[in-house]
Image 1 (cartoon, rainbow, N blue to C red):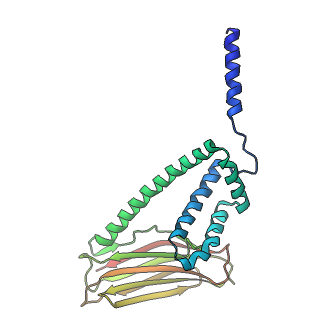
Image 2 (image 1 turned 135 degrees about the vertical axis):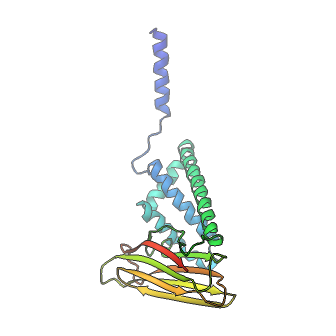
Length: 251
């Protein structure tokens, strides 16, 4: 190789090395920063839609962001300042963040389509599982995980006198002395003002079944249900795992 070529190659290497940004140890890595920013923007979006009387929840939402990702507010703020000084580094993070948002939006659209099909075009048959959500859910005192709901609009596949059975396995992950409870309720709505509800309150690991029979005279309008997590002392280490959930309509 000629001397001129060697010098040119050496100059290119030096140029590339000079362009490389050395990230300080106290600045969050790009992947971590991306994860925190994703949850941070999600929390901000929720707060934008919240009622003015609920703005006090801002700190709770943001604390959840930091706790979930294992960072402190100071670490996030310092990292944000550093990345804004290096637009190329920041742009790469937001490019990946945009890809993630697009992917999640597409998945959400698919889930919404699945829910709409479940709500307005329920399968026919003598015995059908109507459950359209995940069969397993983790509940805690986080404002994002303290409630689970479902709603199904009755159609021609429902008949008067059908039996509706909601099955749930609950596993409490908490000290025995912790006053932790889970409230389950299932409601059948007839017309505009008639609602029939069956419910139960759990405070220990068990398998629970809520069962009711639809009216034999009046047509059913909709079937709804929810689970509410009740923790009176705010224990961050406790949770309840709901599993093997099913919603059986039997003729």
